Length: 113
Length: 117
Image (tube, rainbow over the protein chains, first blue to last red):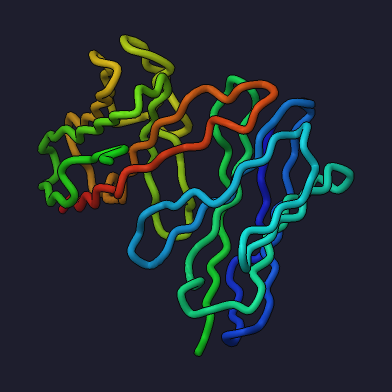
């Protein structure tokens, strides 16, 4: 069975600190897709990134970066120089080829000014 | 630039009443989903559809019915609402992920907040 674990329920940081959100997934399939979504206080779900299992290349987008390591089944998300606008719940998700999404429970990030 | 649109955005029902949530997408996506989100519970899949005329049960289907008569629409029905169905409901759509390409993310609607008294 597939599973996504986000062990950090809540994280609080002070603005400008770096913060890493952990995501660990479980699957026996060799073809799968990983995603991160952001849910700000306004409630909408915003897609941030996707990765497929054939591409372990890390990605950087502005202050956001993602570290995908198949050896540890992890897809961690780092925010550099955090800002108050980064305050949100962040969900990691796993999708197998042709199957539905499995979401983690989410990590609530609070960035304090 | 509509994407995924849900109506209504807010609704208050009394126990036993029925209602339908409408989801419409304009991206020609094959797959559509209904999720519910409760505090501290993350997203739970209610029902989904992999194409027009098809529906399937998700993780928490009891008390809900769905229909996908048109490719662009996915309806979620509550026949006899219960207080346990108080939640925020999200509709989403996607294409099927290509095996060797980066595709297939979910596009979400803005959510519908339902309160059952």
